[in-house]
Length: 481
Image (cartoon, rainbow, N blue to C red; front, top):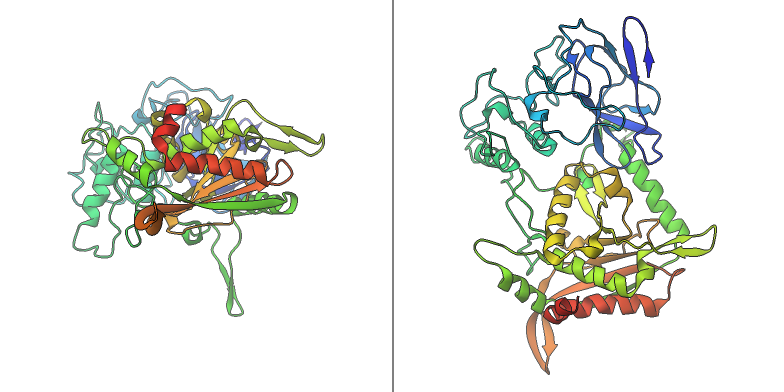
C-alpha cells in the first residue's frame, strides 16, 4: 500500500496459499463512490475461490486500476481513494453488515457501526458517477416478491451468499419480503421470490427454482441429488457452461477462449497429478438397497434425516481409520508417507467457477447427523464460491459423487497432494442375483483411484470392500462405528 497527501492507493494484497495473481470478477464500487474502512470494494477470483476484498481506507473512490476480467498481480495497484472530510468519512457498515460476513482480510480490523452504510453497484449495471448507487442486484421489482419498499427502508441481509444469489438472479432486495428474525432476508426468501418471478407467463422457458433434493438417481430417467440441499434459486451450472470473464476471440473460423485464473490453476494441479502419481484404479458394483431402505426408514415428517452422502462419508471415514495410509500424502524429498491425525474429508463440488474440493474439517470425529449438516453447509458455500481457503486446502482424502451427473463411473484424477479418491456413481434399479434368484436391487458403482507408491492393490481392495460392505449392511456397520 502507498500513500500521498491527496489520495491513497491500495495494492492487491497477498490472499494466501502462495497465490501471485487474482482476476477481477466484479467491482462493487465505482469512481466517485464514498467507501468506508473495511468495506468490500471488489470481488476477485483466485485459484481457490471468489473472495471480496475490503478497503483499508475510507474516502471517495478516485480510480479503479483494473477492469473486470483483468488479471492483477499481488502488489499491483487495485484502487485509489481520496480522503474525505471528517464529517463525510463515517467508517461504518450498512445494517446488513452489522452481523459480519467473515470476509475481512487479516490485519484490517473492523470498525464499529456508527452511521449510514455503503452502496454497491449491481452486477452488469453502468458505474455510478456519484454516491447513491442502487442496492445489490437492483433491476426493478420482481413479480410476486412483495411490494417494493421505499428507498429509506434498511435492507437486512446477514449472509453474503444471500446477497450474491439475489444479485446473480437480478432480484431487488428491497422488493423481497423478509421472513427471518428481525426482518432479515434469508436464502429461502430469495428462492421464493425467484420462483414467483419464474412462474409469470412472460417467462415460459425459465428454469424452476430448485427445492430440497437428493443427488443420487434412484432409477433411470428420475435423477435426484445425493445431498438434500436447502432451496436455491437455480441448480449449479457445469463449468463448461460458465462464461469466462474474458470474451472469446473469433479468428479464421475458430474461437479462442482464454483460460480464467481458476482454470489455469486447476490445469496446473491436474497436470501435476497425472505427471507425478502412478495411479491405479479398482472398482466394485455395490448393492445399496439396504442403505436406501435405512435412509427412508429414518425419515419423518418433521425430520428428513441424514442424506445418503452423509452415510457414505461415515463409511469412508471408518475405512480411512482402518487403512490410514490412504489418508496421507507422500513426501518425495524424504521418501516418507505422512499420515495426519485428522481426517479432513474433501467433497467434489461443481460450482459457478468450476470444480472445487472443499473439505469437512475434522470429519473423523463426526456422527452421521453431524456429517450431514456439515456437508450441506459446505456444499452450499462452495457452490456460491464462498468456501474458505482452509477448507479448500486442508483435504486429506476426496469423496466424489458423480452420480449427480447421471453417470455410473469415472476414471478420476487424484487431488494432489492427496493419494486417493473414491467416487460413487448413480444408484439405479438393476437385476441382481439374491439367494439364487434374479431380483431388482438398487445398485451403484464405487470407483477407487490410489497412488500405487503408498500402497499395493491389497490395501486398496481392502478399503473399497470395507466401504462396500458397510453400504450393503449399513445397520451392522453403524453399530460398529
